[in-house]
Length: 82
Image 1: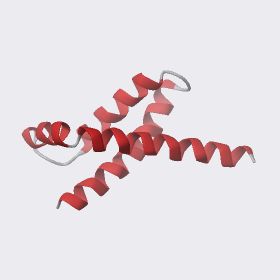
Image 2: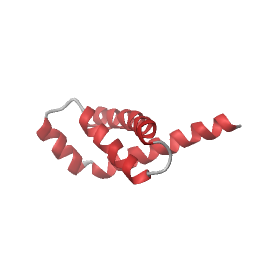
Image 3: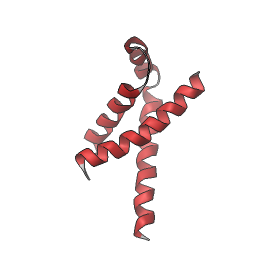
Image 4: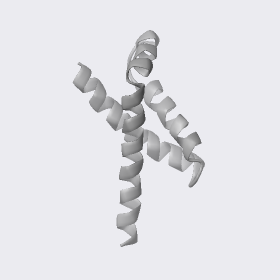
């Protein structure tokens, strides 16, 4: 279950980064990161009390997943420029 949860968080982080980018555009990195983290937690299909626990226990993992998703998104835009 824990591995599946981490995989789901990574998938949601990727979607969250694209959604935050579409909503706020370029710049505003900290605001977009906050929106992305909220998106991940909101879209986990778990009871609210479990989401609260996960947000505390996995906060570093969620943050890293969002950062990796940003790197992925940036690599896509760099590949389009080539």
